Image 1 (spheres, rainbow, N blue to C red):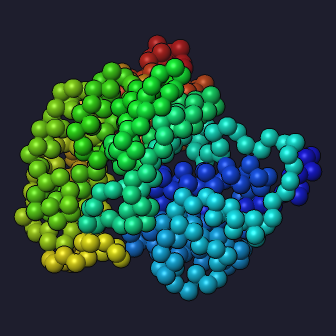
Image 2: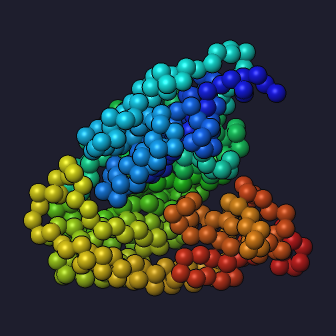
Image 3: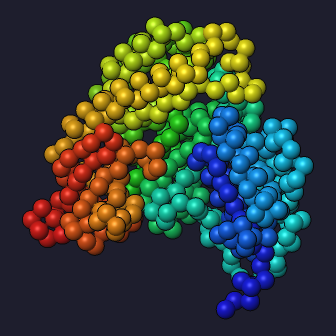
Length: 453
């Protein structure tokens, strides 16, 4: 056994919040691994614990505080990082019990705190880090973060305060990391940031040479380059700028998955104006129609907020009618929370919590009907899916289609006996045989004659 494995300090990690925070955790883990640290699966085996917090909503803050308290009780040596770290006062009494507090994406400060708590080993003869760093996702998919922060001024959001304005990575830096992931065998690359469609705006779309070509730090140039490197490229968090129309054309050409993740947030013009969001709902409907004309296979995912200050019953009914016409494929709905520091807190017309919760329930019931109808239309079609896991207990191969992102969307369920040799990371060509509210049922195309997959 390697002697280093017995002597290296061990770090425990708790990563909360969104995929962008997960990427921050991966960067921290990669940097620690490069310095010789090992990782512990539980509190008892860790020399120090890192808690990467989420501070976007009050419910997320409560979850983060609970995780910090648990780590303190079970281990005692805790480093807090992430969005809640940007506002130490929000940590309350636990801020005086942790070893250090850092803001989001501050890898150097986290490393410094860990080194103080558990000095690193030194063994220059061992290659401790794979080229693309450590990943917490399954081997067949990975997240690639292309920028930090956001320069939009949505009244319900404090991300610009927590993570600063848009700060884009150079395109050659992004593509080097992507290349390392491709060499590792990643099949699906999920491109993330707070504002993916704005990528490069802050650096004036600065060009760089990549494999003999000059590429701009622009989301379309990036999508084209990534589309030549990975079987599947999925773009997340696309604010509805005009450039999204160009991305849909790339989806139609097969350079990115036909999947649009556009957070509309609402449809009623008065509510959108209060949110400081694009407020022409008729224009948005026409754009959705145009996207579907360009790429008929495109799936649209969006999120909506109900109970926003000033939202009337008429506004909410307007939203429901808009959803019936837009027929969004995948929808998430949140009840508005008055996040400390958000400009929306100063708006009048607070909606009672019980009213907002009922509106969320009604919206999601409507969306279930829309989703079920959309999925039913796919029955009988052929498509390609990516296997995520094998559920031996249920006798199922659990996969995803191009229309489904991991953990947030639906699944494609395949009988294990129809694909006995399928494994996570495999692509399968299937025929859709059934559907329900969120998921599809399917069989491999080459199993229909009894050959298996």
